[in-house]
Length: 405
Image (cartoon, rainbow, N blue to C red):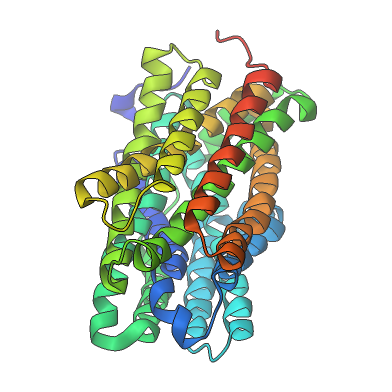
């Protein structure tokens, strides 16, 4: 049985804060790509599909590198892996700030994605090392809010810096913050004093729960959330351009408005978990279906708005879309763990992340391609809403949720 909370190392909450800040700093560089799109699109003479390919390049690197970086995190530990991840991410984002062309930017963002892929496995190992099993779900949820929080930071900080030092300087600052934070993390990180006992307890628990990976049971949730992720990536990538091109926002306020979507995601990642655990007594499938329904409706409404639509209609839609289509991951991660079993959660998540990232890599630029070819964001939003509906249907018909204990 886990030891009482009273007897545990109180420094674990400081460590959790450090890990969460690592996510915030890393995600700020990631989301700087789409937040700054209204500023660099015209200077680099990019199409909307090419803007989407920048984000796809970042995700393509994560798709290919996630298993390898997870192995490196196991082999070399949290401190070393996180340190190298932030340094490499920072250097590559600063290189992207020097981009003279689409090709340079694409390669830079791809390499930045390789650096970012170090951070999630390392932070997950950190939570697993520091927290006993009865606290890990809470700690993991808090950690994951760092990703949308980084999006909020990018949406608020980056456009403001553009007014002072231009988009290149703003992107370079996001890279520099990552580079410097790598040293801060390395200095503050330490292993728990009881790490050996925690690992022994995990090994004993794993030995009692060993099982093979349930690939066919994992495919429906992996493929459905891949479609959800396409909706998420299209939303956060193209909202700034949509607000600028259609709703007549300035580039500055178009980027700032994205902070509402990311703030909604922070609410959703915690809130949907509470809804699933408390209101639906541990059921995940029904919650994911409702999230999909809300997401499809909100995305479809975006396709009906006109340039004269009032802000008090548009801005709440962006916030609610963040709660739904950007805030679903906590519930899907919990369901993956419950289907795969405790000893196969990592493999199950690895499978889902690979499928999700591959779908986002392909799907995000397709949204931009539709707008480029037709000149219509409305058609692109409606197509995306239909696509999300396919994911909802797949969940409803194909997913078999394990019985809750």
